[in-house]
Image 1 (cartoon, helix red, strand yellow):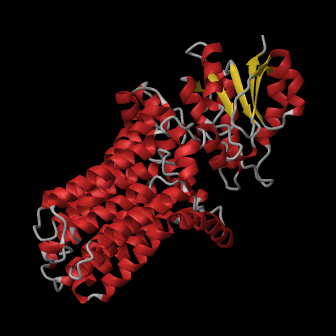
Image 2 (cartoon, one colour):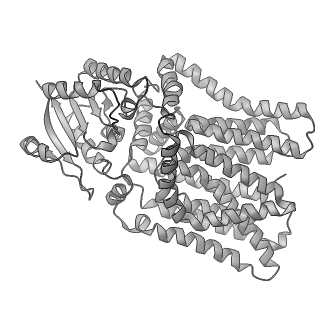
Image 3 (cartoon, one colour):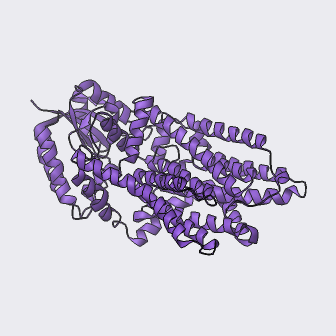
Length: 538
C-alpha cells in the first residue's frame, strides 16, 4: 500500500544502489571505529554490569536495581559473551546494531520510494545517528530499541497486501522485544496499531473480523514476551523487586519534572541537535510537505507524519529530554529526508539534472560531519568524554577499576556511594548493594527514605572491604528536600569503619592521577571533587 508507482527508468540501477549502500555502511563503520575505546558512561555501565551479573548466573533485580526491563541487559550479556569483557566489545556490538538499523532503513525506504530515496534515507540515518549531540556513539538503550522496532515496521509493510498471520505475529514479537529493551518503546507499538487502523480505513473498513484477527495476532507477540518475563521473575524469586523498580518507581520518576522545566530542558537539548542536523531536518520538512501535497503520494505523507509524531512522543516521557532520547526521532527524519530526495530525483531526471539530488545529499551530510569534526576526528577520547559529560568521573573509571581489581580479591564486595556502575563492571567486582544509582534516593517521592534505609542495611550486612565515595555533584543530583538518613549514616559510620587509602582527583583534562597513602590523606581537604577509595579498618 505504501509503495508508490514509479518509472524504473528514472531510478538508479540495483547495482548502483548496492555500491552506494556499501559506501554508506563502510562510512558508518569508519566514523565509529576511532571512538570504540571512549570511556563508558554510567548508563552503559549499568547495562554492562547487570549483563555481567547475568553471565555469572545472577537473575535481574536480585543484586542490582534498575527501572529498565532486562532486554537491554540481556543484549549486553550477549555482546560480552561473544566479544569479551571490554569497552571495545560493547562499542563493537553497537556498530553491528547500527549497521543493521541502516540496512533496515534502506529496506523500509524501498517500500515507499525509489532506490535513490532509500539510499539517501540510509545515508542520512548513518550520519546523524553518530552525532555527539545525540550521544550517538554511546551504546544507549535507544539503539537497541530502534533495531527491533524498525524490523517490526518493515514486516508490517511487507504484509500489508499479503495477510500472512505469521508475519504479523513476527512484527508483534519485534515490537515486544523493543519494549523489553526500554519501556518507552510502547509508543512505537501504538504507532504500529495506529498505522494498521489507518490502512484498514483506506480499504473502506472492509472485513472487520479479519482486521480484529490481524490486531490480535500482532498483540500476541508483545504479550507473550512480557508474560514470559513475568514467569522468569517469579521463578527467580525477584518479582517483588521487578515490580517495584519497573512499575511503581517509574510512576514517581516521570512526575519529577514540571512542564515549565520540561520546556527549558527540551530547548537546552534540541537546539544543539538542530544546529548539528539542520540540513537533514530541512530535507525532512520538505519531504513531508511534498508528500502530503501530492495526491498520488498522500499515503506516504500520512505515514511520515504519524511516524514523526509518535517518534517525538517516545522522546517525551518524564520531560527529561536527554540527548540520547532524540535518537528515537532519527529514523523518521531519515525517511522524510529520503522522501524529499526521491521526489526531487524523479522531477529533475526529466530535465536531465539527475546528479543534483546526489550532490544535495552529500552537501547536507558533509555539513553535519563538519559540525562534529572535532569530536569525530580530532579530540582525544578523554577530552570528548569531559566535553560531553562534564566532571563525571568517566575518564578516570578505568584506572579506578584497575586499582580496585589489583587491591581486592575476586570475591570482594565494593560499596559504591555514587552512581558509577561502570567502575564495578570494569573492576569485575560485585556491589555490596543493589542500588547502582543514588538518584532515586535523592528525589522527592514516597520510596526515597525506605530506599536509603535498604541501602544502609544491605551494606551493613555485607561489610565490604572497600568503599568508593564519589564527591562529584552530578553523581548524586542531591535535592535539599531529600531525606537525610543515608547522608547522616555516611558522615558517622564511614569515617569510623573505613580509612582513606587512595584519592582520584577529577580534572578538566581527563588525565587520571591516583594519590595513595599519606599523599591522599594530605590532599583530600584541598580536592573537593574526587573519587575516594577507603579500606575497612582492622
